[in-house]
Amino acid sequence: MSLINKVVIITGAASGIGEGIATHFAKLSARLALIDIDVDKLRKVAEQCENLSKAKVLGVPADVSKDGDVKRAISDIKHEYGKIDVVINCAGIAGYNRNILDADLLSEFDKVISVNLRAMVAVTHYAAPALIESKGCIVNIASVMARMSCKSAISYNISKAGVAHFTRNAALDFADKGVRVNSISPGPVETNLLINSGSNQVENAKTWETLAKTTPLQRNVHVMEIAAMAAYLASDQAKGITGSDFIIDCGFILSGTVNATFLRNDGHQK
Image (cartoon, rainbow, N blue to C red; front, side, top):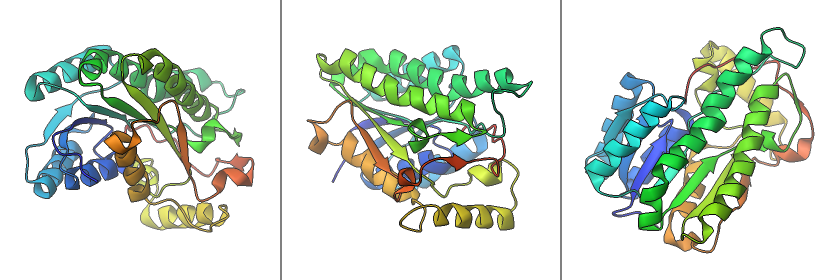
């Protein structure tokens, strides 16, 4: 599979799933524009991708929860490359250890929704004219938690349910314009999310080990599995696919309800 000459925007590209998608797409010769709020990490990932692709990678520092940043980033990318073929909406934060009874729920809820859902709508909205021009596509990173109940993760779960429904609605809006919109719903994916939230290396390893045991396949999802699916959906091989959600979770969704109280509040775009 090749993404040669496709201009691909990836939000949340400095770490986690976004970083994994960025490095995988670099190997497939995509022309990358990487967006993240963490300037230092963004620079490192952009350099890594340039080494892999042997081509220029545009790093665009931006806070996707701010409309002005998003509008500027999309404009700069279009000006630099002349087109936009693919948008991978990956930026997100975790929101755990809050339930409907917590006094500070609404402040967390607003923050999580602004990054995980509203920002995705904003990026898509501002990139829409360029995507229509190129008849491109969008891949949104959702979560299996959009379909499951999870105690003490109300903000995160609602945000990801919104992503899934946004994907379907956007797919309808774009269909007659030749633009495809799909989503990927990962289960437990081993990233640096927990370390970002304050977990040390030992706690991090134990948490992922515990999560692996909750899946029927007794393993967690690898970032590269998500990246490979994103590459397929971004490629011409998926021309007939829109409005669909692809679950990659090692059977995690079959486990029913889960308890996320062992996870801490993240607070970082990833």
